[in-house]
Image (cartoon, rainbow, N blue to C red):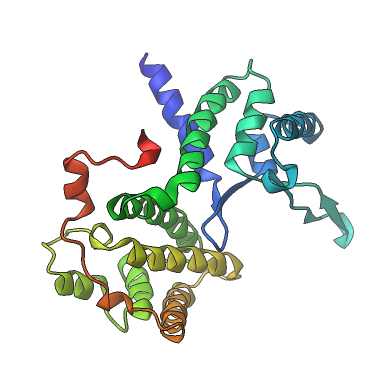
Length: 278
């Protein structure tokens, strides 16, 4: 029983670790990375699974291109030669279909079937019913986006040389909040010591921070050499650009948005559930 629980935790970990977010916060997986996660050693065999998944996608009334985006890559070969290899940018639904059509004798494939089935259903509810959510439910949804996005952002930042994550985080806030650090924001909102500022933002304010996180992630991926200063400057620059855009559009500056009466921690304690958890 203990081994089963550990295996399930490992399963979730490997699929989340290879999850990517694009500039708009949309998640995707690369087929080549999923191939390794599902313990397929040959691309030829895995591509056959992808083809079956695409057929299932089409039969279910969905457009293949929306879930199996082309993503060819160029790799280096001996003697300065290069080779183009096929790859795909997969939606969560595509990953689910691939898992369903994979070799269920592989333990990790069987676990992937369960994982992606549950998560795909949650994703469908989020996208379809977001406009029907209450403000507190929207806050919960976008708070999850910031939490998931920060996991990826900090992982990339570490690869780019960041060691002082407090400074790195504050640079992003300073750009977006006209020089305010996380502590400054917390004091302005009247929060208690160590209370999460992201738990005390409206859905609009959280949305601005989701954009800050995803845009910084995209730019850091392009950073060639590890440099904490460059990464921190990038985070500031993104925050400032988002702030300038809000101003240009005539929107309300993040620091001028009202702080909700209740934190998300309080709301969760009261039992409010976002639709994706139902």
